[in-house]
Image 1 (cartoon, rainbow, N blue to C red):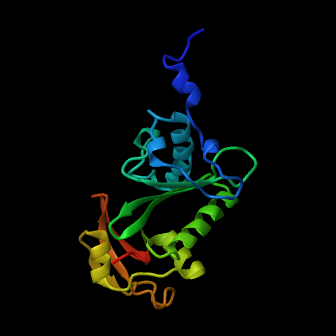
Image 2: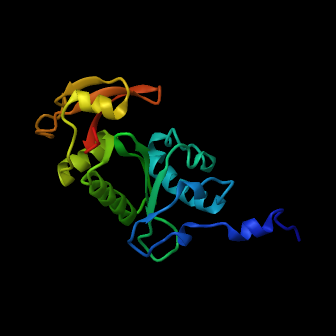
Image 3: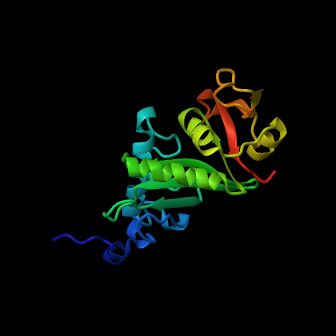
Length: 205
């Protein structure tokens, strides 16, 4: 029988269940606990959620494997929505000078997991100091069904991002769909392509 070369550390490795506050309750996971060198099972549990959520677009460019966790993200929170001990929805963010920026997410593909991630996102974006850049489907959901606040001027978006943007204002194809949400802009994403976004939430600017 072969033994793990550091079997004492192996036995102490943590999973999400070690942080879980109970079914349906979101639990914070300290970034220092993440990384396959620290808690490999925990990192794989969270990566599975990211992989499922972004699989339809080829994955998330910051997290291409469990080894990429936690990258430079220092806000991690997850929730268990069912009776097994594994997490079912995930929210990831970064502490910035402008507040807490939501940057990525994850879910297990179930309706319960998706709903938990959406409702938590809306809750956070209604909380002062939280903000996110959003586009396409998730922006539509947050605007149409959760009426989240948004940043309505170019100067504040630039302050919060610290990056170059091309201000658009009114969405060119959604004036009737998104009445009053005139904070759209275009910027380079990951050095790969230009994308239209809107800053939702209330950054500290």
